[in-house]
Image (cartoon, rainbow, N blue to C red; front, side, top):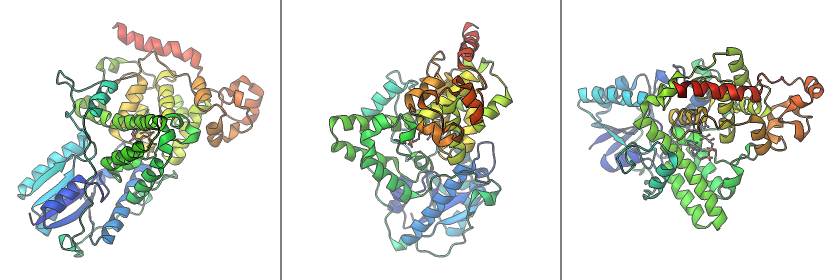
Amino acid sequence: MKTVIHWFRRDLRILDNVALSEAAKRAEQVIPVFVFEDAFCNGPDVGAARLTFLLQSVESLRKNLVELGHQLVIRRGKAEAILPALCLELEAQAVFANKRYEPYAQRRDERVTSALLNVDVGFELFKDAVVWEESEILTQAGKPYTVFTPYAKAWKARSISLPRQKFPIHHAQSPIRNFKSDALPKSSDELGIPLAQNIPPGGERVALDLLAKFMAGPVYEYGTSRNYPALDGGSSLSPHLRAGTIGIRTVFAALGKARSRATATQAASCDIFLNELIWREFYLQVLHNFPHVTKGAFWQEYDALKWSDNQAHFAAWCEGRTGYPIVDAAMRCLNATGTMHNRLRMIVAMFLTKDLMIHWQWGERYFMNQLVDGDLAANNGGWQWSAGTGTDAAPYFRIFNPISQGEKFDADGKFVKRWISELKDFPAYLIHQPWENPLLLLRSKYVPRIVTHEEQRPKCLAMFQAVKKS
Ligand SMILES: Cc1cc2nc3c(=O)[nH]c(=O)nc-3n(C[C@H](O)[C@H](O)[C@H](O)COP(=O)(O)OP(=O)(O)OC[C@H]3O[C@@H](n4cnc5c(N)ncnc54)[C@H](O)[C@@H]3O)c2cc1C
């Protein structure tokens, strides 16, 4: 082929990029394109943190491409209108892109396919974001997995492909020709979506640095440290895996290398990290095979649950004013940074759905608005798991106690004190139940608790049992 457009979407990187490598292999000229669509700024799930991260990552991709002698052509508008017009303008015979798995993205790809067909241009999609996709891993009965452990076992029984080649730098393949390119907004503020959070930076180099640092040491402690919010033992790669500023095969290759020089205990830690990466693929295959999860419960009987619509409780949860320190610290951290530790996500999600008995979809939406790594598949999976309505769900009667969770995973209250200045003078033994000293609580100006866990638990069980009985 003479000219191929590589359409960047959630693969904002040069290294380990399947569609980009294929384009470089099969075409004389490769023209890198990014379409900034209005949908990025509209709709209920849009969040300033994710939008800013995206803008930073595209800008970093643009600079990296310039360093290699290529121009990233940026156009604003709808992909199904922009791409056919660009193909005619640049005389391209095909558009290559990496696959997306969200139903809305797949509908857009269908529209793009027919728009390109109209101008006689091919559209090729490649598997890139995951190692195993869609229906590649099925049970012996040929059905999709709905439980993680056997899925992970089947996943591990297969071999993993190695990182793709770097995008080959043939100047002739994409000489900078000053194609018309639209300016990218500098920040989400410019788009009328103000960013109030101090989020981590985007871009491929940042992602590769994070990976290198994590694999140089923290991965060996991950099995333990990942549970304690104050230790921040995770890789922090989730926004990068979501935006595609790092390739999944690169992560697996680095993990394999780290594991090859590990002691037995360290290797066990590496395997726990591997499991987390498989969770990501598990939820993506759930989304593909059971797209109804985007609209309601995986177990559809639970759509009949009678959730509370207490707006005041929801506002208190969102703003970190429930009176439960571990919940409030986690929510204040989310609101300030666009990030939240995995253990805390489970705690606050359980609290919203089981203690406040508010619909998991309210929490799912709030997370999507705030999180820098907000991802339909993982977020929906995490919320449904916590609410007890999803695949592989914690059974509805397993309800986290926010006090004992705090005492177990933030025993000295270090994390709580980082985010709740009102509690800075509380001794560790009181930090997760400050109401036990009413005078100190009053003086601290920290909020009293809005519900009592012991009273809410039976109410929540009754809510689930009512549906079970019917
Ligand atoms: C209610 C709830 C909502 C969540 N929403 C999201 C979300 O919107 N986006 C998101 O990426 N993750 C989500 N998670 C999963 C998990 O909390 C984050 O992936 C993790 O906290 C990110 O930190 P890290 O990169 O340091 O992860 P690490 O612990 O270093 O894990 C490595 C990678 O594995 C993947 N991963 C880890 N745990 C999970 C999981 N349970 N499900 C799917 N993938 C996982 C992520 O890509 C992560 O970057 C959610 C979990 C819950 C309980």
